[in-house]
Amino acid sequence: MRQSYIIEIDGVFVGAAAFYGNGYTFKGVDSRLKEIDGQHFSQLSEVREAASRTYRRAPYAARVQAMSVMARSL
Image (cartoon, rainbow, N blue to C red; front, side, top):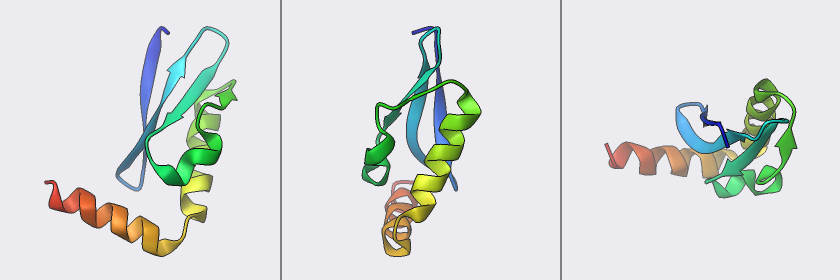
């Protein structure tokens, strides 16, 4: 692994993309991104798009709960 990149959606840290020479592997820390955890992408922009699309498909209530937990920790 040469480099890793933080993936944030709407100000929420949801995972990281690690570059391995031939592309990026996504490692999610948010359960709503379980379906793309470990997936390989050729471009960093593809990781961000897939994470955003998957995150935004999650039920609104789950997103609000995650944001309130984050706000309490500040």
